[in-house]
Amino acid sequence: MAAAAVGARALRGTGRPVLRAGWGAGWRRLWALSGRAAAAASSPVGASSGSGALSPFDRRLKRKQKNWAALQAEPAKCDYLREEVGSRIADRVYDITRTFPLALDVGSGRGYIARHLTKETVEKLIQVDIAENALKNAVESEIPTVSVVADEEFLPFKEDTFDLVVSSLSLHWVNDLPRAFREIHQVLKPDGVFIGAMFGGDTLYELRCSLQLAELEREGGFSPHISPFTAVADLGHLLSRAGFNTLTVDTDEIQVNYPGLFEVMEDLQGMGESNCSWNRKPLLHRETMLAAAAIYREMYGNSDGSVPATFQIFYMIGWKFHESQARPAQRGSATVSFGDLAKIDGLLSRGKK
Image 1 (cartoon, rainbow, N blue to C red):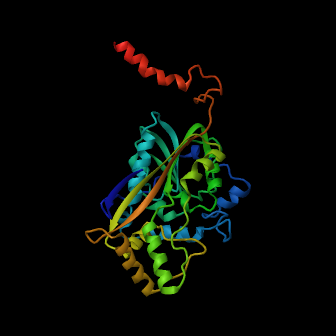
Image 2 (image 1 turned 90 degrees about the vertical axis):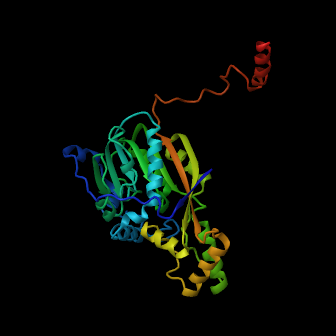
Image 3 (image 1 turned 90 degrees about the horizontal axis):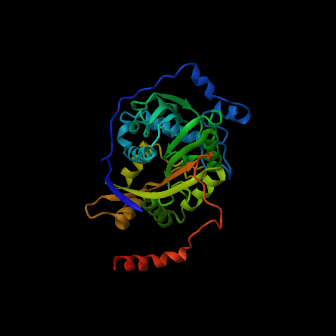
């Protein structure tokens, strides 16, 4: 697992807001809305916005948070983390030596992946997000794009439409991750590829522990302030159940240094990453927040007075089946035993003599 340490605002970029136009009549062929999918698409937050055990997140609140963040005077100043992860997703796209005629960005936000891609690699791109303000304020890209307001769990596209689907730091907020993976698999063409990134379980562990200890000390108990994340051991299983094969799942860490706890929370709000769990606590007392800031600095503080915030990132790659793809040989068809490999060194040494 690699770890990259960056300054709190070292990765922040700038860009002129732009909203791309459509491509004409050909666009209409992408849509195939019926039944529940059509009802979900009529509402930007889909049918998963109700509270309950199967819906841990308030999707309507998440939409408001992302819309608010996109309307700030300088939304780019909090884009440093999404920019970095978006560039790493683009690097994985470039590792595949082919051109993708039509691609989909699920949970695109302000276009954090598109700005790192070229039209030689992706000819056309659909950007989907629940926050219309994020799409309206998307940064400039050389790829022709179309913006669609829709929920990640209810993609309003026909089966076998896209050659490539990407997603960066969005799927950790969906209520039904297995369904989201199935939706992505469904809209991919055979031999199409899905490349995604999402936050892992160790994300913001410093903030989580500091808040819990402060609440225990000041209030005699604690409630969740950091939303639950998926474990890396579950991702491969979920992708396989959705129908993907030739899977690759790897993990990385990005550590960002901040002046203190309050700056961490301010930037999370600016990213649209505030907690939207249904069981979240509506407010924290002033004494609890001050205690949490002191605990954060005491337990995790750097020698220069700053405090680190760790973001664990899971990267995943999955392919939709096609007859042309390489497949493992049948069990028992091997002609060489692994036991024979031990004899290679002896044969080589004799050959040198």
